[in-house]
Image (cartoon, rainbow, N blue to C red; front, top):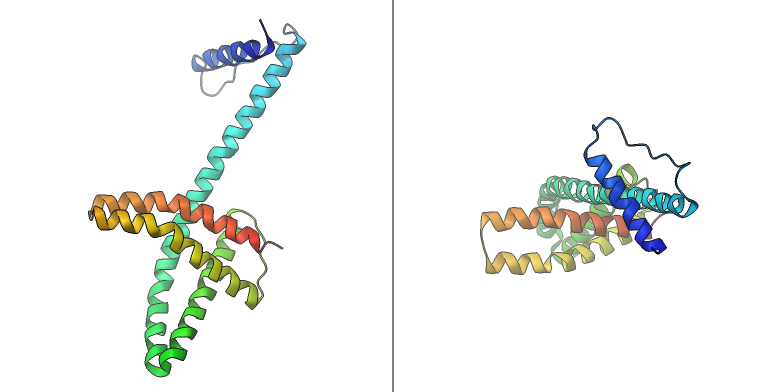
Length: 185
């Protein structure tokens, strides 16, 4: 039996024993009776489990970041739309440009706050950093939402919209975290 087969055997044995144990107790393996190869296998299995736990933790953080970003952005969007309309009425083309600059500040600031709370990413908060952060995030989210827009045009249904909102929450969280990483201190 080669080492890879031993890893699989130990892994299957460990899974089998965990399935029949109580939830509050973890099965203990008598490591004194196991050869060095199997000890290494157990270490690999524990490393794989930690990686799986961190994977699920990251996926849940992406979802949380995406949902919070979407909800807070929607709330801020109403105030921005009012300001944007007012700026266009007052300043026409200049108001249009100022309105988008304000939108980029809102996006950059909101994502910086969420990235620091959820991911512990400290981002630069200079006005140029927030402006660039918001602009890059705006472009990335527009590109990422093109398939959802097309799907909504092809299948215009409430169920489709809800499913796409949930799927886009993961995508938005992933994009927002990575864009925030570009402005990390």
